[in-house]
Image 1 (cartoon, rainbow, N blue to C red):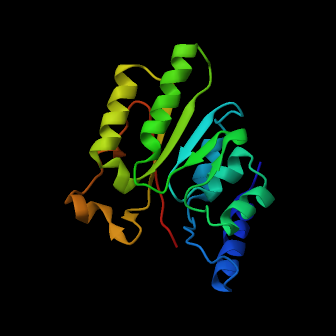
Image 2 (image 1 turned 180 degrees about the vertical axis):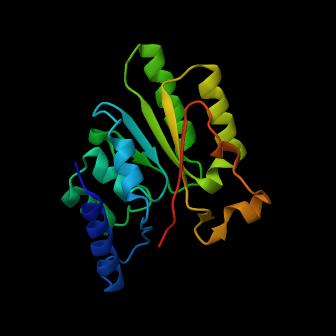
Length: 187
């Protein structure tokens, strides 16, 4: 299993390559949530599916995508829409774009009688949208094998989530079925 240091080292390397013009494409780096992700991935099996937003480098690494393969994808401009079918990792650069895909896979798994689970990672801003609520509600009502992981750093890019929604707490910040919530501070 990868360590916090391994993840930070990977993102530091990417930042250095980007800052030196070696990666001419947009990248969204993660930081501050390494320990929480490592803990969550202890429950994710090889046959499980992982769906993420545009910040998915850590999830790819923790799901088993080799660093060299991930680096190639990032260097060729796919950092914000990484897809590795062999490792069952899919991400979307569209806000909430991973939600219907994750729900569709969970629905198919249930129909086929599979024991696999879907893990769908979303940011705090996405968790407050109607599309998140509708996908979550459908998963509950149909008892689908999906877990939503709400990653709360209190911002969407540079926008304060709670100010946008004029709320002190996020709706899914409390304990909810099929939702794992954690907060962290990006450095």
